[in-house]
Length: 274
Image (cartoon, rainbow, N blue to C red; front, top):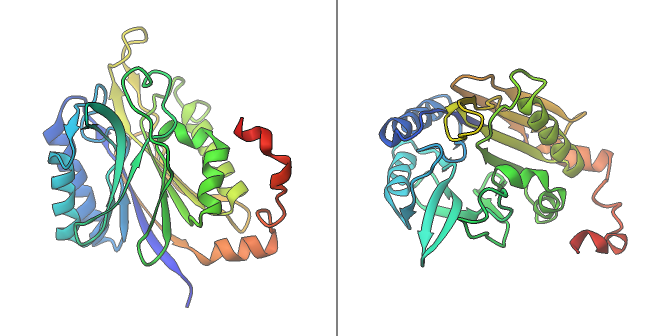
C-alpha cells in the first residue's frame, strides 16, 4: 500500500483588522478539512489580521485557539503566520500544531521582505516536522524565492513544504503575481523532487497608501514532483478550502528515475553561500 497524505489549504478571504471574524473562518475551515478526511490544514500569512498585523505574546490567543481547534477536530494545523513578541523582538512566525493540540514546530521567517526588515527579527534555521506520515517543512511567503533555502529542506529530508503567503496581485488575472507564484511552486517541486504547497491569502488590502485598494493574489497551489512536475490543486481569487490527496511515493519514484540530488556537485557551489 502506498504512502498517501490528504492535505488542505485554507485560502481565507481575510478582512483586515477583523481578528474575530478571521479566526472563526480558520476554525470553520479546519473543521471542514477534518470532515473531508484531511490530515493537515495550512492557513496563509497574517491569517488573523491581514496588514498591519497585531503583535501577540508567546502562546497568545491565536496559538491557544488553534491548539484547541486542532485537538477538537483531530487535525494537524499549520497556523499561517502571526507576529509574535519575544524578549522585545518581533518575529513573523508560523506554528505546527499536531492533532493532539501540541506544538510540534515553530518557524521564524528567515528571509524578511525588504518592507519587513525595519520591524522584524529574522530566524536562522529551517523547520521540519515529522508527523508520523511525512516530513513536513514550513517556509513563509518571500522565502520560496530563495532556491538555496528550499534546497536545504530537500537535503534535510522534507517531503512536502508548506508556504503561508500574503501577496497582492499587482496585475489582475493569471498573467500577474498568481501565475508567477504558480511557476515558482512548480519549479521548487521539480528541482527538489518533493511536494510544494503555497497557501495564499484571498480578499483585498488597503495597506498600501500609494496604490490604494488591491486584490490579494489567491490561487493557492499544490505542486507535485511527478511524474512530470504538475499542479495537482489550485484555487482562484475567492475564499476556498482546497483539498488534495498526495502520493508520497512519487518522491521516491521520481528520484530513482531522475536522480538530481544524487548527481549534485557541492564542491562547485561554494559561491552560492557568499
